[in-house]
Length: 253
Image 1 (cartoon, helix red, strand yellow):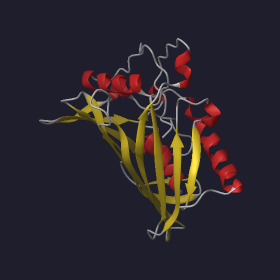
Image 2 (cartoon, helix red, strand yellow):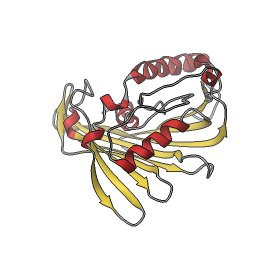
Image 3 (tube, helix red, strand yellow):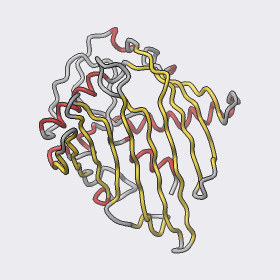
């Protein structure tokens, strides 16, 4: 299983919105989860950051390290920049390849999150002293490549701050997909950290892992580690306009 597929599954379970001024759409989620989602949504698009991605093969050998910079105060074409590839400035061909991949990812972003995650069906898995933890199913047909019913998302809401501080994706059991005989496991986790006390927590670290078996004995898979750093509060480029946006979108992390 390619790591990019695992990463897509992880980050489909988060939200991205730039320049929101008013939030009108209800998620249909239980109260504390709805409040936390809307709080994160309202703050999305105000942070510039550096993202580091490390990709490992099934034998835990490092295949690639990318360092990227995201700045929502810039126009669409200039928001993402590849700073380093494997510790060095990227070549022109590497930048072109990275831009093609980035453009493909951006084209997949348009679907509202409510068309992917079944928020009204969210259930409270745990209510402890510090957190609410919700289990959220993925809607049938949300993925053209993977069986949605084999996955679920966990969202953890910090009671003190009323914010999401952890996201996880899990499989319910092994399954088969075209071109891969059997997918044994997919796991993804993201943790959120407080960058500034007056603003909602932001993703600061994530891991994604997948393992499959081809022809029942060839094992394939991989792992990715992501980290976010060098946060700077900015004014979104689209904030020049009075925009009211009501849809939750899949995250562009």
